[in-house]
Image: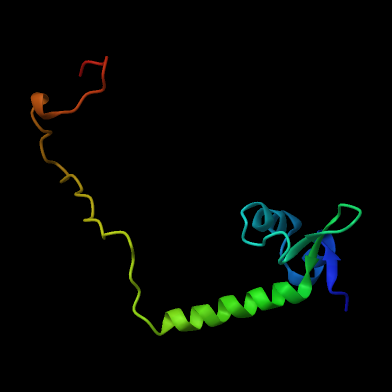
Length: 103
């Protein structure tokens, strides 16, 4: 098997669509010089060996993460209060109105 393949050939081999592959490249998930290289004729090629290393490293990282408790950097939000069906609306002065509009 070839080590370096075109985006289209890699799509056939991996199951990713060409669009998904290009999105990973443009978002920096797969970096130039790592999983992605530019051939002397300026074609974008995928390094299959480096891709496999990327998959294995992500898998091993996921296994490490599953052994540790999840710590979200964002605080949990309280659920929004739903209006009670059949309840009367708040007094007119309590409503918020947009600038320039009168309610």
